[in-house]
Length: 590
Image (tube, rainbow, N blue to C red; front, side, top):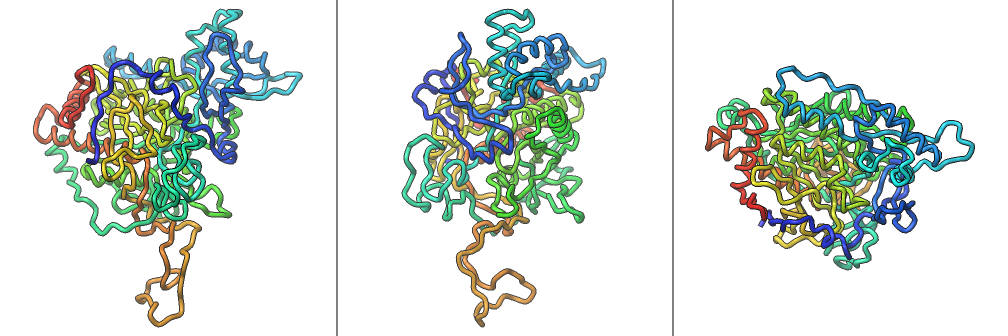
């Protein structure tokens, strides 16, 4: 069995999932935290406020808070916040986002409501030491947030209400959901349930764990088949109304024949136009870059700004040259989509660094502009996105109310209201603790597109040992030892264990040039273009691809489900029909 739905029971089940569960992600390498200006929130040492629950562990960026767009544009509210924050030696600098371009007057009220919701979504604001302070201050977003919460208790500032402060969030450091040697394990043996869980290992050696020989979760393989056949744009228009679009918000793509991405003569990458399998949206990527640049200029110095749509660098340590943990992540996911539904187009949106880190603000910026693109260009069928796949997540410090206060939950809800199916990976920490955004999944109305949260199966159909579990997961799909595409321009620093040269029997054909004429497998030479890899990162795009395939099946058989039928109502109708065809249901009958 490659995948199946698992209906959720009604009710949020937070207490059932959280109590006694393993803590999940509670540590990252110090150099990774420093690179991205982040720390681990330790519940035993965290600043506390009376009336608020003890937090759980999470990882967050210390110099930013996520503050709603409408609050950032309210000088009186910002001034009140800074009166409070001065007491802990900090000042909050809003990004003061530019006003979004005006919408046409003929837009209906529903569209205007969506645009207003998007305008109010949280985005980064920068914390710096307070000017004129006479004592040094530790700039820390958790202390700042707790100071604001304490101000709601004292009620000394009328503008600082509990309702207003609840809309302000930490900017969580999110992680990819692929298995790698570090930080999941950091060694070459069996894989534990997750860092710090103390669950023991899956096996005594690398050969009976999810880590391949030498401690790397990826290994080069060869696939002896041609790219799956793909219909022409003309045939797609005739059969389906248009090509379906699946958005992968991830590391960005690299060169591969199957994905129609190639190297540019002067450096960098480009898509093979006009109808390549991979597409990019330069305007959307520019929005992510502009917001990141603005935060960095205002004082968020550790912020690593994502500048374009392409997956790089290969390594964050060029003197050593070790392949970054998530280099090739989106390329691998896109290859899964190509295998399942070759007639699709993948919209590659880069929000993830090659070390697997995602800033929550960057992700929300991408989703906000993706939703805006769908609404603002509702009559342009080329602008629609049918499915979004997210192979990333974080653990919240406050699980009881995160679904009601999170801007990430809100923007995903907006996309669902536009008829977009959102699929999210459940994480690889062998815990029932809720991993967001997958854990936002709830039983929903039969007339509303659901959020699909996906755990991982082994190739034999059993649930993978590394996969998170819990009643918040509503789908399971193969995610262990998956074979897919990998960038063909990567040959990192490791070498084969054995390489032989001068011997008459080792000669290669004329024109073939390799470091040696006969050698063992090079563990990080991916020029063959394919790899084996594991993680719920790969379960999610597999399910997303099957949803797209079901959309095409419906479009080919029923004119009312054609993808050229524009608008949220039409998108919702065909999405629900596709999910019904796949056997989707929940405890409310949806």
